Length: 141
Picture 1 (cartoon, rainbow, N blue to C red):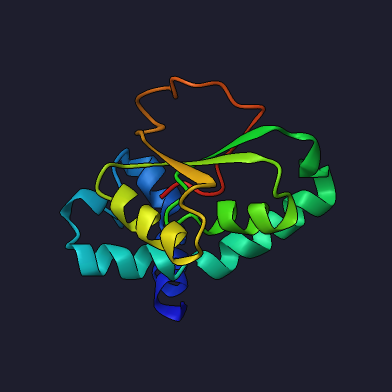
Picture 2: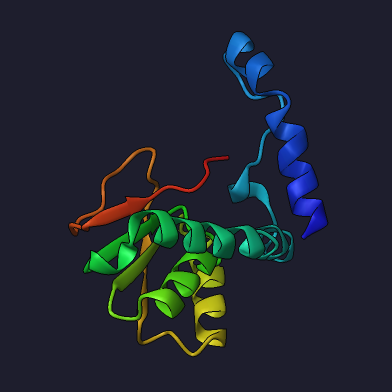
């Protein structure tokens, strides 16, 4: 987990410079990462996703939602944690096409493949075709 957060923290420290230069100084190009590297990066963020789910549920009582999309949900950690807190919510994780197989692997490893759906989507350039009561966009890289 440490390497992913260290990488993200380092990139965050360059945000202002990236905005000034109108181009990323530290780029996370998921389309160029090999599967092993991408899987490692995505799954290392699960601890933060679980904590976010607990915090959101505590602050907003997420149990009244019937459907929720975790946009850019990576390994599905947020959706998995939400299911444990609110098992009646219909959960979907939306991710880039090359990340979806990793998302499915992680969801299947929790025996939730029949419960949590995946959706191939680029949230920056397209909208989901379904409607959701809530959409969570936890972080954008």
